[in-house]
Image (cartoon, rainbow, N blue to C red; front, side, top):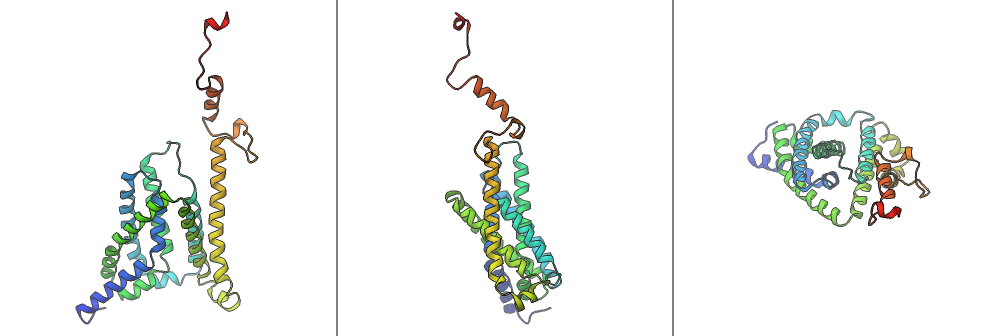
Amino acid sequence: MEWASGSDLLIALLQIAAINIVLSGDNAVVIALACRSLPPHQQRKAFLLGGLGVVVLMAILTAFASYLLSLPYLELGGSLVLLWIGIKLLLPADESGQVKQSEHLLDAVKTIIIADIVMSLDNVLGMAGAARGHIPMLFVGLVITIPLILFCSAVIMRLMQRFPFLVVLGGALLGYVAGEMAIGDPSIRVWIAAHARILDVAVPIAGALFVVGAGKLLARRAGRKAAGLSRDGQKMPRRERAPGQEKEEAKSTQHPAGSRRPGPADAL
């Protein structure tokens, strides 16, 4: 579709940019959560690679927005994916050193792309309407807004590193968005609107509580396993402890810090 003048073209471009910025606050939180555990020199790479992947896939999704959003169970499935991503991002970072940094980087990039695409399924319809079927215009609008979103993500990430409780709030936000997606699915939207409007509020709140609760529980279990403790605080049997943990405990038992090995003089 052609525009009547250059001003119409500019207005449409600004509309796309504004819609993407306004609706991408939760996307910035996802990027910050996914990158907070990376080394500083890899955070920029994850920002750029994740942002580029999101732009390309968002342009493709928006071209088929009306069709995708009419598919039953698509948003229900997407909400389940988003719940798992929210829980995963609340888990403590792997400090064992057994995973290469490149794998951490790729995992962060995949998390950014998958979560942002899932969360943006309901955003693409507004951008598709503003673009009026002009895919190059849509692509340009997405590209010019990505730097601002990445900047916001960097600010949020710094705040999360300084105030850890913000990580929990970010996970709760993902759970809330997952709940909104679930009740917005075409397969149940009409029934909820007619018979159970309370679910419009209850399901998003339940999603937020579920993500925070499950994330905290799994994080606590991981911490106990790393410390070699059972649920009641007792030492776990050897078969339940982490690999290599028995050797470390044996060394510390045989030769505690500050002690010396027994020598010939000790036998006299």
